[in-house]
Image (tube, rainbow, N blue to C red):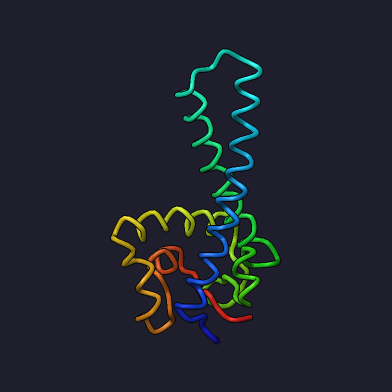
Amino acid sequence: MDYAGFWKRAAAAIIDCIISVIGGAIIGIAFSILMVTNSNSNLETIQTWSNVIGIIIGWLYFTVMESSPLQGTLGKMTLGIKVTDLHGHRISFSRATARHFAKILSTLLFLVGYLMAAFTKKKQALHDMLASCLVVNR
């Protein structure tokens, strides 16, 4: 298999971050306007619900796209890479979910979990190892 390199993966992550921020902002603003105009909700309640919705949308974006026949997010597709299991097959929704939430651990370790992709034989980040996944060139 032709494993995707660290910098290619990093560039895809930046693209996905931009998409997530813009999409989240649009949805957050729309949700906030809806909450303010339809109820007497306070700012703290609106912020809490906006955060919950943001987490759900981020989870669905990564999980649905990576477990779909496309096998990658818009950032990954732009860079010509995809997520597979250890045998090169499409991953399941549950494996994509595990991979997504394992990124929390990769982040909490001062991003060392992500940097591992630059140094491991199969170019796997910590969350890839935990979910038994690979990121490969198309």
